[in-house]
Image (cartoon, rainbow, N blue to C red):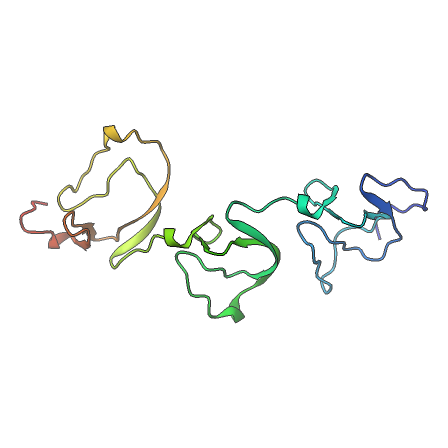
Length: 197
């Protein structure tokens, strides 16, 4: 077994104390509940975090639990959660049997939902729900309007003062175009007859 072994006079770093090795796996900020059935890859050492402290794997230091790295905005740390959290695109998670259990992870706070798998947490009311004949576009340009029956080849609007950013929106699916009057996506050959496409 690899590691640092020393007698009780060994000097440990700040917020750590000398302790005979009991387990190769100690709790960390990132894994506060190490699995008991999985083999540990962390070498055994004689220094462990003092009472009230936990090791931060990123820095290697022992810190107070509330000083562990924080979750992103609108998220909170939980000991264990199902991996198939709801997203704007997938609000059905009845089949929990197929969900992986992740421990020591960040999840969306109450009232928030993940925008997309691996994405940020947004208010549940902010989800973009696409209608029939529409598809979600996660990187639409706010500078370029969507083509419509009335304006099939839109030009960038110089008065918008646009910056190059991605914004999610619903665009018409392939073979469809938005009717600028009804705001519905219609087949290209179903544009209103008054429109010359």
